[in-house]
Every structure is written in structure tokens, then in C-alpha cells.
Image (cartoon, rainbow, N blue to C red; front, side, top):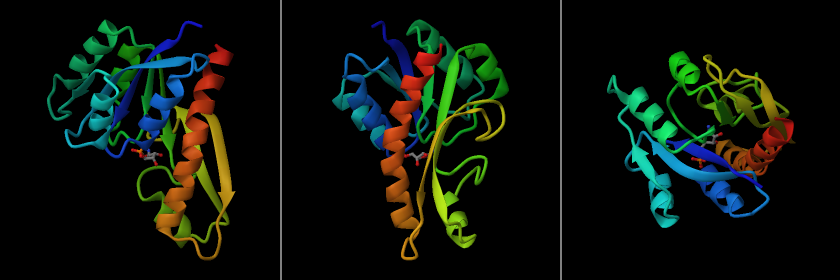
Amino acid sequence: MVKKNTCVFISGQGSNLENLILRSRDNFFPINIKLIISNNKNARGIYLAKKNSIPYIVVNTKLRTCDNQILRTLKKKKISLICLAGYMKIISKNFIKNFGKIIINIHPSLLPKYKGLNTFSRVLKNNEKKTGCTVHYVDEKLDNGQIIVQKSFHINSDDNEKTLKQKTQRLEHQIFPEAIIKLFRNI
Ligand code: GRF
């Protein structure tokens, strides 16, 4: 199997990145992680990059030249998939167009519900009966593109933001790899 060269964008904890690194060691998993991009030099994901000897760059999104710097590196590394895994910046329309290949994102809610931040507190405030997570294609609008995989679970009366986050992340670690497998089965 020829694996797709993949870049993962992160800003923080990197648990989804860690999971994808593990999965990509499997010969039958369709991607290899060739690059990690972080807009936060203190992200735990940087430690994961070093530990797994994966090239990484820390970018300063305040610089006008940032998008071009990233695009040049993606081209050099022949990246054909970007996975946004907790990347706290909006990807511009121009970037999407210039990259010209697939970009996917993982979001901790049942999209189209609860786009944006603070999903768990909003879900609880609205007394939702269930919540979950979604992997979707990225377009120029926030948390908006076509859904690839979505999974839900029931919310218990004693759930709080912390338990919802834990349960959601456990599910995220299932659906991100599932979505990637589905993606390359469909192409
Ligand atoms: C995940 O919950 C993801 O849905 C959201 O940001 C979080 C990142 O978590 N977009 P991690 O950094 O992968 O642990």
C-alpha cells in the first residue's frame, strides 16, 4: 500500500496526534505522518514529534508570510492530506485553495450543532440527551464542511464538562482513524 503523506496541525495536548502516530505504524493504515505543524511552541504535540522523530515546525500565524511558509513546506514534503487535530486557528480560503488537496478536522460535537469553542458547557446548558464528535472536510467556514464520520453517546445525569470531554476524546480516537480509512476507500 502506498501511504499518503500527511501533515497534522496542532495547538495543544495532541492526544489525537498521538493516536494517529500509533495507528500509522500499521502497514494497512493509509497514511504516514511526515510533518507536524504547531502554532504553539509549548504544545505537547511538539514533544510527541521529537519522541517519534517526525519533522515539525512551529509557526507564527501573526506573520503575513506564515501561510506561504507552510504551503512551501507542505509542497516540499509532498503532503496530500492535512489533519487538523485541535488546531486553534481558522484556515483561510486562500490556503485551502492553494493547498488544493484534502483537509479534514475533528470537532467535539455533533455538527452542525455546537460549532466553535466551549462545546461541552453549551451541550450541558441546553440539557442535550446526547453528544459526540465529528470528522469533516474543511471549507472556508468554521466547522462547516461535509461530514465524513460522526458518532454519539448518551449523556448521563451525573456527567459534567470533564467527563463529557473524556468520553468525547475516547470516541475521537476511534473516529479520526475511521474517517481516514473511509476517505481513501472512497477516492
Ligand atoms: C479535540 O477535542 C478536538 O475535537 C478539538 O480539539 C481537541 C484536541 O485534543 N478540535 P487533542 O489536542 O488531540 O488532545
